[in-house]
Image (cartoon, rainbow, N blue to C red):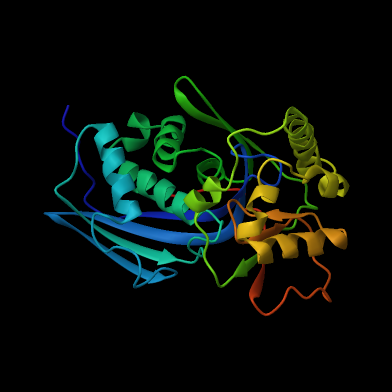
Length: 295
């Protein structure tokens, strides 16, 4: 059956996210109150992208842009591509800093494509949208909170990615520390060993379970709950500034972790006003985004 494309523009707002949250490697994620805003319209041919804010002048302006690639993959899922697209991106999420900029682009592209098809929400519900987004990203830990908002637990089974959203305790008040330097997920993953000791795996399983309780019920347990032995230590040599900042915050009782693959750092509770991260870090107090992507 041929699709009917919408005449007017579609708009989507997507939140930044932090994944792993310490021990919850490739499974746990948190949506943050910092947003990209995307607009798309169907045209008679070609692909044009305008970018302002983060990434302006660096990101592709054609079909190689991640938003367009995600839209085209979603149109393929729905059964038909439009002749052309015009996309506008107002980016506020720092690029390649471990704050989910690629997931925001992917989720935004999936939802823009869905919105530009008449009856698109019925043809591609949120569960299916999550599966498409996770397939494009390669793992669901960032796309899940971006799509659903709040604190999410994501996993993959036979049909693809799934996730549940859980409300956080009011005492969870994130601050992200963003450096000028960039980091890249692929490089960070190459630093990880093929296997880990059984004791470390067991340690992280316990801390991940505790983290769910700490984030939702008792934030006083966050310092213990955010301990990790699976990935942060292996990546520390490549990101010494990040490792030092995480250690400095934790030494004064602030539960802090590497945000995603880094190099940004996520603090889960308020940071003392006299704490000095250094001139190379920009501290950004944020809230937990409870709504997720809005179309």
